[in-house]
Image 1: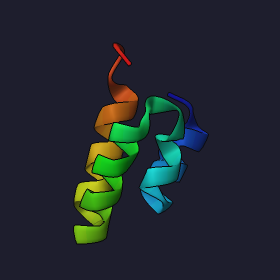
Image 2: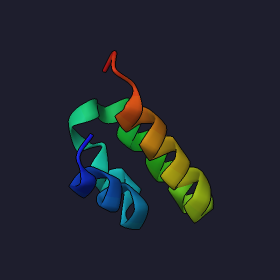
Image 3: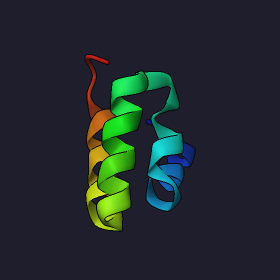
Image 4: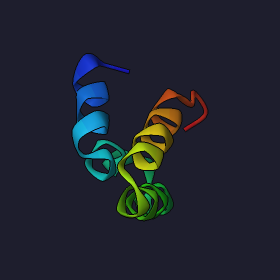
Amino acid sequence: MSIWRVLLAIFFPPLSVLDKGCGSIAIVFLLWFCGWVPGVIAALVILNNPNR
């Protein structure tokens, strides 16, 4: 996970998980729409997952 991805996850979480699939984008977008903090946490968790 690069520093650019982390910064992107902090400022605009759905854009940081674009290459992770449509489901990840939808989940992060919905959480981000409900509140900034849940979206950032979800994006960082998805980016930190080594299986994806």
